[in-house]
Amino acid sequence: MSILLPLYVYPTTGAWDPLYAAAKLHPDVEFTAVVNPCSGPCISLLPDPVYLNEIPKLKAFGNIRTLGYVATNYTEKGLSQVLAEIDSYANWPKTTNNTKMKVDGIFFDETPSVYEADRYQYLEVASQAVKNGSRFRDRFVVHNPGLIAPSVLNSTTALQNSYINLTDITVVFEEMFDKWLDAATFNALQTSKVKRSKLAIILHTLPDVSKKLLDFVVEQVEETADWLFLTDVKVKDEYYHSFSPMFEQLVESVDSS
Image (cartoon, rainbow, N blue to C red):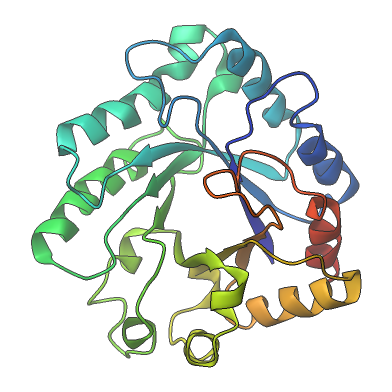
């Protein structure tokens, strides 16, 4: 089991230290960290010097993969703009003259969940821009629609009638912890026909739980997905802008799962 980390924390001195400490202490846990300096790559310029100083430090850890954030606005954003943002990330090493600025793939946020042929073509072109060539080390693609309907996940033709076959990981559920506990949602997710290695679950607004209960939650998420992120941050729009007090225990739970 691995951690898909929305690393939207501004990297002031020491701000990313919880990730570095966790990666060092738990070398068997794989972290896929999404960097997001300007709600995207800062397309007309480079990220500010604080990001330029911190992003290369991620490369010191063999168990941290780095993805660049690109929002598609549910494919309403012009495809040319999406491709330009992908190019910006790809050009970071050359522009900065620093190979450690190379990211390993792209995290596409705000992707559609309901299959439509024209949207598929849009996302296929975007995915190919990451997958083709050597501009991204792992050529890794993640989609985050926020929710994939249980009817899709439980269909024997899920890979044919969705966007899942374009990705390495799809976030099938990003919501408040309480909504994940809903019986219909919980049961449907655990009977998914899609391989767990292709799926991620992100839960925020967790209550203050014991380590034993956190272990149990991680085990239950693992019944659906091999990738997860949990946080007890409860402030809207701030869920991923800080490391929550539970982060260290979350990594411990994943390491022992």
